Length: 169
Image (cartoon, rainbow, N blue to C red):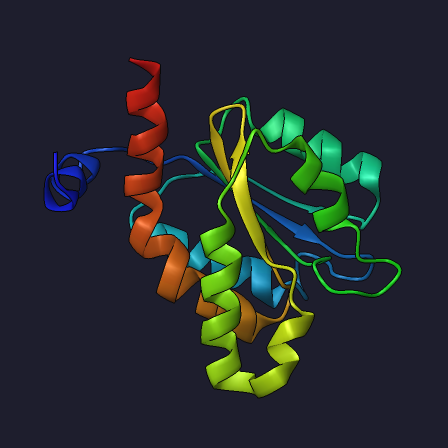
């Protein structure tokens, strides 16, 4: 089956999404990146299973991943992907992935480079599969979230989930 046929079949796939903002300071009112993720998902017709704000603490990240994976096809974490001491999203969650999708981070950094230059190397954006759930780890900046969502995540969500679901049959 070719890519076009995959895409056609994938269009029929419903995608339940959860959004997690990783921040020690954001609230529901100040979480512009989390709101953008939710708005873009719902505009694309994807139902929102859950939205949370968690502190950048390994236990909270792991708990969110494990709980949300039980009722989500896709979980998008935004924040905590930089290189500061408090940024623990990547270090905590990537080791739990059964499969990594390195192309996501690679392409994200290339696209980001065209927008912000060499500072794109500071991003540790990642994606992978955890318990048959696609997981994206994006930076927390609203511009970075918009880039990841509009150029990479939203256009491929149904196809990614379809690939996971067809492995189960």
